[in-house]
Image (cartoon, rainbow, N blue to C red):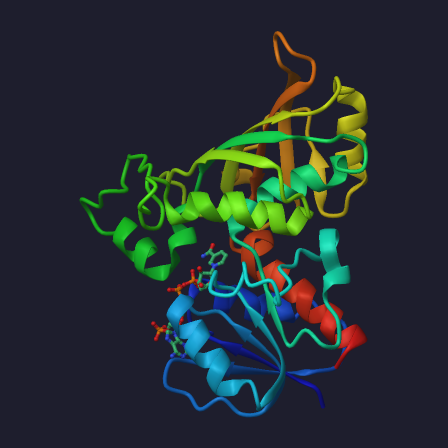
Length: 292
Ligand SMILES: NC(=O)c1ccc[n+]([C@@H]2O[C@H](COP(=O)([O-])OP(=O)(O)OC[C@H]3O[C@@H](n4cnc5c(N)ncnc54)[C@H](OP(=O)(O)O)[C@@H]3O)[C@@H](O)[C@H]2O)c1
């Protein structure tokens, strides 16, 4: 029997990954591993752990597992590691790619909105401001949020991750560099602010996108609606409504008041699902189907 192990199974992403794996309609056995568990040989290991732990574990288990799917940012920008959203670039997974990275959750929402437009428009620049859920910071941040007097209660915090020497946060730099890698657009300029908001689940982004020619708004909506797991809504959609859903929702599309080559829109999606566990499950499904 094929085996898929979830490592870090008691964390926010780990728990959701266990639930997501149940959706795969192929025969395989799931194994759960917590902090002090010995990891047994596996066909696929899904690392639902933070950066330094993921690197350490990947090194330890690489001779015992056929494939590693890592949810952390540790390997995402390594040129030898595919950074995969299966709807966009499943082709980057091969039998030879032992380690596969799942992208940053906020970047996932952005690139899901850009990928369907890419064959029809060239876009030199995109700007976004994020409204990121507390659960994106893992169970420690969620526990903090539920503690009376939390800094995050009734607040917006414009700092996610650490502030880098250039003044940007680590989260903002993920938005820049992961977008370029996933979309295979090394020159796209990504300008962003990332902000934590007092929402438990589902990240959102306000996006401004500039193209080489005027946008056809009806074509843009059609392209979004034809893309898997993506829906354009004529009604306003909020993070509360999309929590627990697999679909990434876009609403409020409009042309810029002065420049028809610019559009503005709002994206919202479940950060624990499409932003993490569902994307991981989709990668596992590709591996089980083709390579394990
Ligand atoms: N949350 C999101 O929306 C999201 C989205 C995309 C990607 N990610 C990434 O996914 C990863 C997990 O995030 P999370 O939000 O699930 O964090 P989390 O809730 O803090 O969970 C991390 C888990 O890792 C476990 N762990 C720590 N050291 C371990 C070890 N040596 N062996 C096995 N397990 C170990 C922890 O165990 P204990 O239970 O014993 O503490 C905990 O259960 C991170 O890299 C994060 O950046 C998260």
